[in-house]
Image (tube, rainbow, N blue to C red):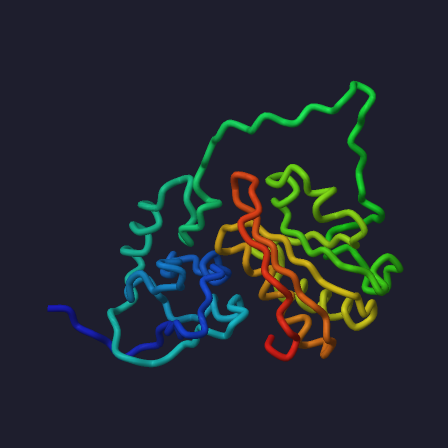
Length: 248
């Protein structure tokens, strides 16, 4: 017979959760996973109730509540972590699975003299390093790209970077809060014409879109937000029309 104990434990509001996966790496016990597009508590005995994951959720879908639950079991947690595949993170994110595929045949230049030139027009590009007062951001069409996108999408320069000011970030590995504050400051000072987010199809990468939405809402500006999803095989999977600022 399983005995329940009154204790603090995580609760997930599935209506708020959008499956971005940002909460999962912050749970050292591996108690959270993304299942069917939502964060789930794998087992009550894996959750210590300390709430290390709370600050990572951009949607505020996580709370600590006091209720009857299975007792936290450190030995069960240790065994659970040992059973995780070496090439897979507890979030179940497809980017964590090792994959190998044959690159497609690249189009050959018409002549040997033809070269492909970079369309990058400024430096730095890392969101952490770019000051909000940078002149190349003023009244610009800003491109916020996930780190992996230029490697996955072969025509990144011509299709996305040309005539845009580039900012690069990773919603999974970088400091989400610091990046959000920086992006809000950039929008305030630069008042750009538009913001385009290009990210990978893996769930955690959609955190970049949430960051952009929150930044626009916090800035109070009416900035069109474009959302482009790139597949791991290098295809454009979707292009979403701008979301009205009032709806963000």
